[in-house]
Length: 237
Ligand SMILES: [Zn+2]
Image: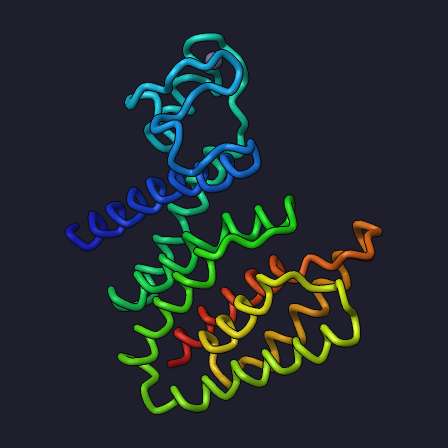
């Protein structure tokens, strides 16, 4: 019984972080600062969203997906993001010990907004690699201590490859990738690093072919492949 309640607790915490992630995703796209306005406003009528209309998933269902004031449709993206975070946190806490689960919660929390913002606006928020690196260093110290040096070498190799590619394809890569790729290379470790480079590149090429664009969104590819590999590494620790 108590076990189940703990899982419910982490699911709810996940949806709250998902709600916070919605702010991180929405505000840069709408040209707003992250901290202003302090409360969320309806983009249609400007009414301040009341706290009881801001409860993850539940408020959306109660309001039937409409603004309480003007009745405009609220994007289904909000509850979907909240649910995704809830399920991701739930999975992490079922599979991993508490501290490792929290490390993955943190990486997931910053990864989803970074993925979507880079995909849409071609800019990678710095918090993505900073929080991912910080959380990964914790995991290194407590779970992969004997690999730290090898993992740093792996990160350095990935950075070197990226710099060589930069010489070849001048405008192909954004500055953010130079932080993001070594960070995820370090986080997933030397053994998984080549798979990160390979699968992220393949995914990027497939993506640009599907979208018929010459610009490869490398950031989202590093993030999605990197997160899966970090998850696998923790699983096989
Ligand atoms: Zn409204």
